[in-house]
Length: 82
Image 1 (cartoon, rainbow, N blue to C red):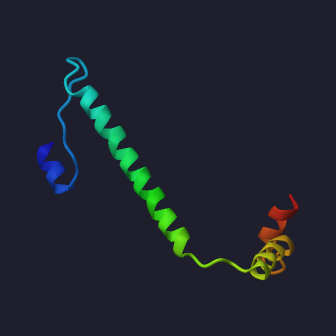
Image 2 (cartoon, rainbow, N blue to C red):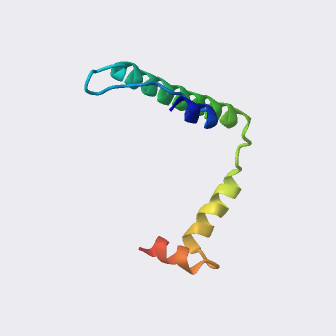
Image 3 (spheres, rainbow, N blue to C red):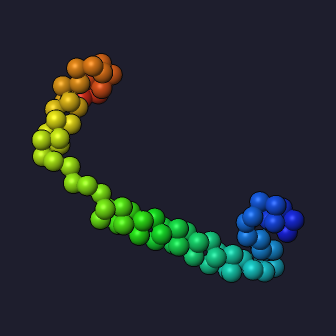
């Protein structure tokens, strides 16, 4: 297990469900990693939104009407109608 963790560059922890060995620590580690990834994605999205150019009202209207009419895309027109 340790060798595979080194090869795949991931974390490794030995557990035993029957002995309750490191089960709680594994769960806490997983939750911590999920929270770290979620928080870093939120921070990156905030940074991007600050530097993102604002779309003009005319472009928004054009995009809305293009979706509504969907002249060139018959599949999109069917989705809009339904």
